[in-house]
Length: 170
Image (tube, rainbow, N blue to C red; front, side, top):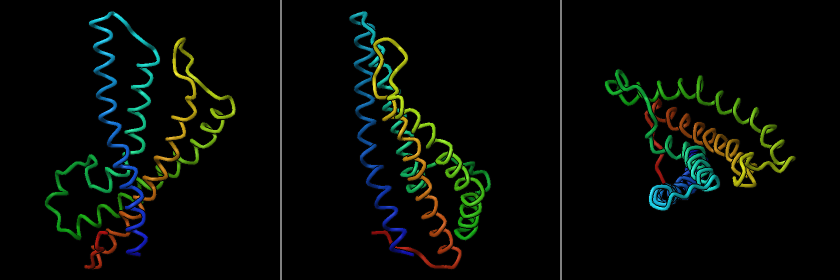
């Protein structure tokens, strides 16, 4: 089990670190857009769409890494007072009841959506917009598959904590 958890988390870390560079790119894109718009009175539909697409990639492909790093949003009113085993129980139950089913539903429902986008070679409906929108839509099932894998790893880690064991990170 330790090997499985480590392999999953290595894959998630690879995507997370790769996607983290997109945040720098997004900052540059937004700065460029602002400079062009306000200093040169120039606006571009493709630049605006590129900003949205990069943000979508960061969000979708970075969610699993956020879970791995335990940096996701949670209401810590009671959670912070729990013991490590109590936290592990909350994580395990919440992941099994909410996160894993959500990932499965999104993956299953997004595959036909993405397939249709590929079939019609979907691009932007806006004049001057970006082509190949289907490539960005592919990030939906990929991102949620990564999140599902990390959820499984999170469950295994929680079970180990409940049993009083720990998985060593690679």
